[in-house]
Amino acid sequence: MKEEEDITRKRLNRKTFISFGVFTALNTAAVLTWLRIKNLPPDNGLLGGVQKPVRDVLNLNERIFNKTLSPDHRAKTYLKKEALVNPRVNGDFGVGNDFNPVEWKLSVTKASGETLAIPLDEIKKLRKTEIVFDFKCIEGWSQVTWWAGVKFSDFVAAYHLDRETAMKYVGMATPDNEYYVGIDMPSALHPQTLLCYEMNGAPLPMEHGFPLRLIIPVKYGIKNIKRIGTMYFDNERTPDYWFERGYDYYSGL
Ligand SMILES: Nc1nc2c(c(=O)[nH]1)N[C@H]1C(S)=C(S)[C@@H](COP(=O)(O)O)O[C@H]1N2
Ligand SMILES: [Mo]
Image (cartoon, rainbow, N blue to C red; front, side):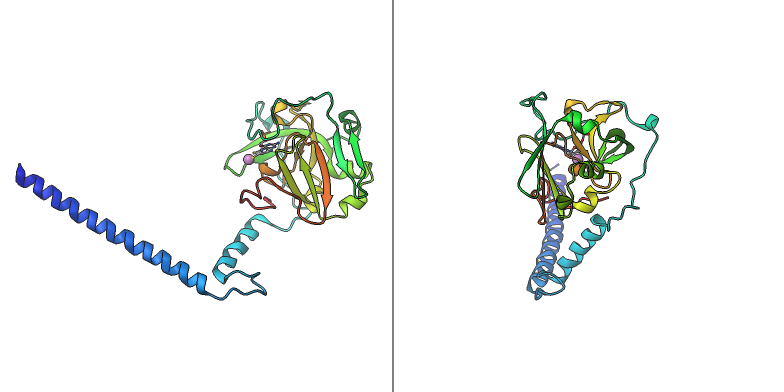
């Protein structure tokens, strides 16, 4: 009995020793690689002030996330009967109960500083567009869903927001400012981008962003802000909730 225990202990010791050795070797390799990258001269020209291996990874990210957007780059569409009847709800920042639907108006800050307050009825009078597409969340799930509203491009045309759309970015925030997105203007003006007030042929449910949300099929779910309260324009990137938490600003598909 005693002898067996001894043998087991020796085996264990040997295993621990090997594991520790491998662990140390891997760590040393990682630290050496890091030191090598850190000590490379950052190039302030082409590489934008970071070392080459770091820039390579950033470039790869950009290639993946920021495909040049052209109006012919369309998200695939589906038939209405393919849409989910009860799509899942994800993300409730700025979509809480402390909200008075009766008082809601879309607030649009113009380039002049003047603010428009547009009721939902007025938005519903504009040409209605529907889309069924595969809504993709960055968490790794997607679902085919059916939405309707006014194209962002029709909306800005109806309200003569040309000085505004000549700027590079549009920002949208929930009425309580808890959630906010920044959208590059080409993506906002894309023909599939909607200011949406209906899901599955019925008014937008509260948890999906009543009364008005953004549906922007060329971007991940994070950019599809629910319950828009305010809209504003800028030549600099407007604030973005998930960008501030490390996600890609464009989050394009
Ligand atoms: N106001 C607001 N809009 C939001 C979010 C949020 O937390 N708050 N989450 C986003 C994320 S991550 C996703 S995937 C979609 C989900 O939309 P759904 O709940 O209608 O399926 O909403 C987006 N818009
Ligand atoms: Mo998401």
